[in-house]
Image 1 (tube, rainbow, N blue to C red):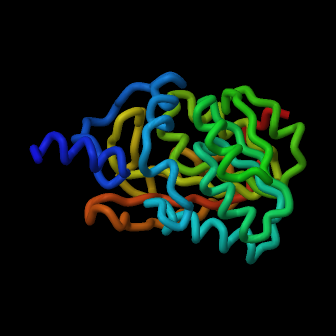
Image 2 (tube, helix red, strand yellow):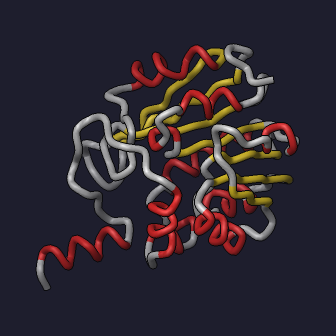
Image 3 (cartoon, rainbow, N blue to C red):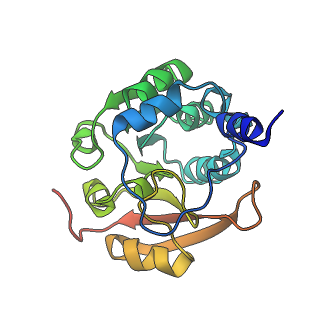
Length: 221
């Protein structure tokens, strides 16, 4: 089997990334993600088999420990994290994604959740759905106006979000270290804490999980 065929197969299974890019990728539209979510592979496996399970387990444990049972997820993707959180005791869950294909998958993967197709920069789900915490993993780096997304988070809500240190298809930005994460998002949160998590897939890759309570800076309401 050729190297190119192996590479395509690995990407479908979520085992490899496209070649690294320089900073400053472009924001992709919903059809780009619809095509990804319609492929077999990583987005259709149980959450415990996902590459992101190591990250989701930290989030699930913090929500469970602090009794944050009503969760709003921004950029819910195919609903694997939603299923995990509901299995871990979330009493109410709502997810938003601008990809109809992602939301279709999510409704099948986590039938106990509420899922809507909407733009994270303008959705009114924050006001319509009563929640204790916001979760937003591997989403902000895909959006040029990511601060408009953060501005939608309601003051007083606990927020757990993650961003990467590497370029990828659809990444508008990535972060060299935790200090860059604090510099960009810190003004929106009280006592923002950043946990650096090594990727199990590559010794060079890192994910930054930032955790804080939304303050009133730039509040949308």
